[in-house]
Amino acid sequence: MEIGGEFCFADISAAADGEARVADLLDGWSRRYPVTLLSSGRSAYLNFWLTLRHAGRELDAVLLPSYLCYSILMPFRRMGIRVEYYRVDADLSPDWQDLERKAEKLGGRAAAVIVNYFGFPESGNADAARAIDRIRQTGTCVVYDATHSLLDYCPWPVEDSCRDSAPVAVPLADVCITSLRKALPVVDGAAVVWLGGARPAPALRATAERIDSYFSSRALAMVLKASYVLDDCGIRQNYLNLYDQAEAALDGELSATGAMSGVSRSIIKRLDVERIRRARRENYAELVKELHGQGARRGQEGSRLGFGLLFPELPDGVVPLGCPVVADERDALREHLATRGILTQVLWQSPPEVPREEFQESWLLSQRILVLPCDQRYSAQHMAEVARAVRQWLSSR
Figure (cartoon, helix red, strand yellow):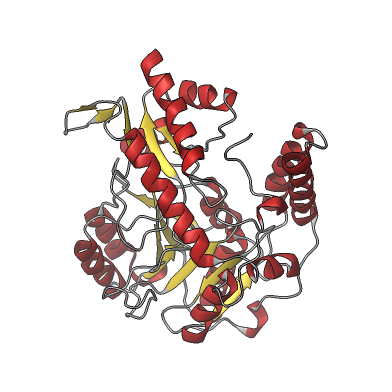
């Protein structure tokens, strides 16, 4: 059996009557704020930027974290926007002083993107709240990327704690962007949530879905993988190639108004959001229990981990995207796990555009981070198998 890897149509299970669906989660957002549902996170970034320009915001620069994926950077490169970076520490905490200083310099002509990592809140929540407030006071537009925190009870930072498992407090960001396919078995889907009161321009509202190369390649890959994992039919490499083709096509088929497909809208009407949340939290807790104390921590100043959990605690309200670990021999560990049918992710390799000398912490982390699967497809027994394979590798070193 394969543990990890891309989602497929075999991973869709209908929620019981009366249970909240993922669609209900998005509907809840739309009752509070204007929400635009688009085909991809890349499209969402294009849409937010062009919407603000349409509204008269003359933005000409964006502040991005030094630890990020290529897909966030790419839309700004496509539009020719000036990109500057702010420091993210080795524990994935933003360097708020660095971000504030650079936001003050750029002022109202810039947007600052804050990325949630793996569903966990920024360290020092009170400090983060004050820093974000000061950044907004400079006139800088604050964009929160909640792709990893999509299923958190508070997907974006707020002024007060959440009550009744819903984000009822005042949001700290102006805009929230989130992609659905990282956490759910959908073909496509992303959302722009206008937290600061702005409304999407009519010319930039989501249009009819596009059955393009990305959509068709990914949908077919999800069909073929379902046949393979359910009935052992087909060839594994065929669907793996299609997933790669879909990812490559996404960069060439960007649209600021491409809508989330009807297929994905149908899927999220069936997914039980509480079951998914519960499974992810339970699986993460199981991995933490199994891997606690593995590896060795050396020093604090410029510390490195031979192997260790990046987030050894699971706060209330957090729904983890995966279980990130750091390992000095990351690639060897990944290969070891793959030979045992455990597929892991590298989130992320630093893009070459991020200056390596200036942001050494982010570059070092990108060479050592590995994300173990702990999503809703799996049980405690699967997590024990993942942890056992990790311990076997550690003992062999």
